[in-house]
Image 1 (cartoon, one colour):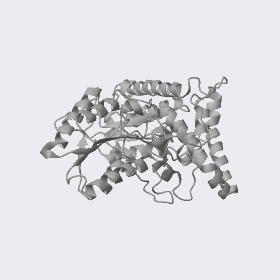
Image 2 (tube, one colour):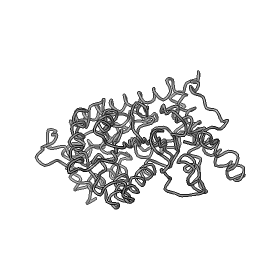
Image 3 (cartoon, one colour):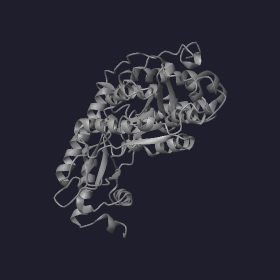
Image 4 (spheres, one colour):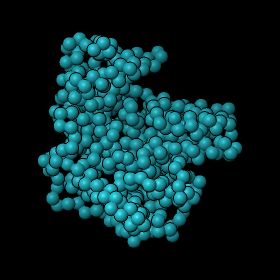
Amino acid sequence: MQHDDPRNGESTHRSSKKPKISSQFITESDIRDEFSHHHPRVARINNGSFGSCPGSVLAAQRHWQLQFLRQPDAFYFNSLRDGITASRKIIKDLINADHVDEVSLVDNATTAAAIVLQRIGRSFAEGKFQKNDTVLMLHCAYEAVKKSIQAYVTRAGGSVIEVRLPFPVNSEEEIISELKKSIDEGKSNGRRIRLAIIDHITSMPSVVIPVKELVRICRAEGIEQVFVDAAHAIGSVKVDVKEVGADFYVSNLHKWFFCPPSVAFLYCNKSTKSSDLHHPVVSHEYGNGLPIESSWTGTRDYSSQLVVPAVLEFVNRFEGGIEEIMKRNHDQVVKMGKMLVESWGTNLGSPPEMSAAMIMVGLPSRLCLNSEKDALKLRSHLRDCYEVEVPIFHQVPKDGEEGVRDKDGFITGYVRISHQVYNTVEDYEKLRDAINQLVEDGKTCKMLFKE
C-alpha cells in the first residue's frame, strides 16, 4: 500500500469523522424544491435503476464543472486530486474501512466488476488457476456482471457455477441452503472455487441477501476471494465492510446516495494483494495503485466523484441523517407494497425484513404476463398511457413447482417498486389504479401488443 503518497489520501485536505447535523432540518417543501427538476406528472417509483440527485448537489456539480472549464490546468494540478481524496475519505468513514487507500472511485459497479474479473481472468490465462476451476455467482446476478465473467473468465478457461435464488423467497435460510448446494457442486471433481460473487441486494428480483453469513460460509469452505456486488446498498442499507468481511465490495453512489450519475466506490481489503488490480482504462497513472489509476483515466468530467461532500451536507439536513432516510424509505416501501397487495389480491416477493428501499409486488394473474417481452410491453404501456415508471419482472416457474396463486391463477409477474424521499403516496396510488383499470377492462399483455 502506498501510504506515503499524497495522491493516495495523505493530503492536508481534512474530512470530518462525524459531520455536524444541521439544527435546521429539511422540510417536505424543501424536498419538493430539491427535486423540482423531476417530471411533474410522472409517478417515478423506479429510483433503483438510475437514482436521483437533489438540486443542491447538481449546483455543486455545476460549480466543479465550471472550475474545469474556466482554467483546466489549474483544476487538474491544484483541485482535482484533493477533491477526489476528500470524497474518498468521506466514503472510507461511511463504510468503516481502515484506510482511504482501500477506497477507489470508479464510474459504476460494472467498472468495478471488470477490475476484479480481469485479474481473475489473467490468473487463468497465466496458468495460476487450473482450467475448469470456477467462479460462483447468483443466477440473478446483474447481466453486466455475467457478461464480464464471459469476457474475462470463461474465455480464459474458467467455469461458472450459478446459485439459484429462490423467488418468491420466504427466509434467509432458503438462500443459505442453495449456496451450500452450489459450493458442493463447484468443488466437485477436484475443482477449486477461485472467486464468489455475492449480491448484497439483488436487482431483479430485488431481495436483501444475508451477505455476512454467505461470506462467512465461503470463507469456511476455502473459497479464495469474495466480491460483493452491492450496487444498491449504500444509502439503502447499513454498509460496514469490516462486518461483511469480503475482499472486494462495490456500491453505486448515484443510486441511493444522491450523487449525479455516475460514480461508485470499490473497496479492496488491505489484506488482499491489490498491486495487480488495474483500471480497465489504462492512462498515465498505470502502476501507481488502483485509487490513483481510477482518479485519472484521461480528460473527462470528474464532477460526480467530487460532489460527495455536498451529498453529505444534503443527507445531514434530514433529522437522523442517512440512517433516518434509510429507515423512512424502507418503512414506506413496505407500506406501499402492502397497499398494492391488498388492492390486487396478490403477494410480496419477500418478507419485509428482506427488503431495503425496493420491494417486489405480485401482479394480478389476469394480466397473463408470460414472457420478458410481455414484461417490457406492460412497462412501456404504463409509462406511455399512465405516466407510471416501474420495472416489471417475469417469474419463470421452475419445473415441478406450481408457484404462487391469486384467486384467478398463477402469479407470473411482479413490479419492483422503489421509495426515495421525493416519492408520495399518490405515486403508488397511480400505479395501483392503472393496474386495476387494465384488469377491469379485461386487458391482458397479449392484447397490449395489438394496440
